[in-house]
Length: 221
Image (cartoon, rainbow, N blue to C red; front, side, top):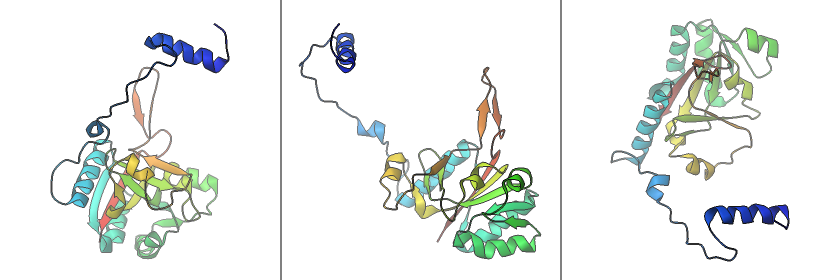
């Protein structure tokens, strides 16, 4: 077989498919219902998205608490207290910084920011708190980003991860996420459940490298 590497490669594909050079190919027919199945249920689309996200997030091992925007600080602080978490790293997102920090101070929870030393982050901080950029209903994933307000390590290093998510940021699937009207940075992390790993025998272990527990506070209003 002669020709360039590219032509040789394509000739081998044609031979495997039983085609000859120049042969016309039938147009690809795509069943869009398979690619993007309709949301379950009826009624309000936002409500359906929220319900689907909560169901899928819980299915992959994350806990979800739902509350109004006005109760985010209270609900998050209660979670930290009940989980006996005494130290957190927090982003500088204004939604997180204000009332929540006051609530944690009232509960004697140690709060560190983005400038914490790596040794302290890895050895002493028990929970990272982030604000989700978006969420994907079809997979139950939350999207966190690296930015001046949000360190990547906040969601990746501490053994617990607390995510604050506005329900207006839930999209149906990854296609919708890629078409988001907001500018998405190049550095994004899709969190779909606690961190997991498996050995060669397929034994699944949770939380070996990164958060073994992911708590979502989903708020509206």
